[in-house]
Amino acid sequence: ILMHHIRNTLPEIKAKIQSALTKYQQELLQLGDPLNDGSSSGQANLVLNIITEFCTEFRTIIDGNSNDLTSFELSGGARISFVFHELYSNGVKSVDPLDQIKDIDIRTILYNSSGSSPALFVATTAFEVIIKKQIKRLEEPSIKCINMVYDELVRILSQLLNKQFFKRFPALKERFYQVV
Image (cartoon, rainbow, N blue to C red):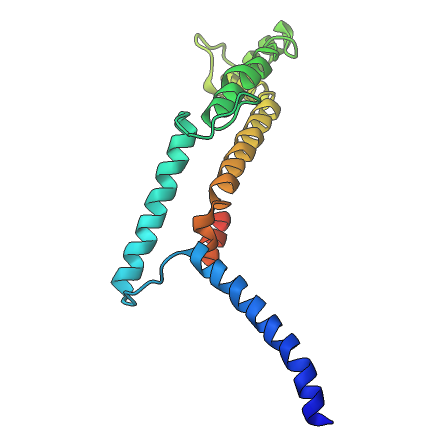
């Protein structure tokens, strides 16, 4: 009975093993040749080459020289440029520097900063009080700009790290994500 069971199940087990072996051999082929040099200097050189290649490709995408250009949407450096020159510029231009501060407020701040004796020149403290309020109004468009640029940089990072080459080094890929 045992021999009969072995004869019946052995081909199925052999087929599963062969299928798994084929799958993993294909995966190894996709990952590339083995690293023959096990020395730390060889590994350091390999990591340096990977980082250099990543930086080169990242710069290429930012500069707009990528082979993956699309006509459907702005991406890479063009998107970042659009965010700064169009969206952020319009956001800053929409802030009227004089709509929330009145002449009487400026006069009051100047009087308060001069104390008991009238001043010939505008005191630094008065200028700082007035200007800090106005600069605070630029915070919202600036944060929106920062978030949009960051999102584009993360998208570029994801695009680069999804290449086949980084599947070979998942720890390095994860480290790139942590740094950004």
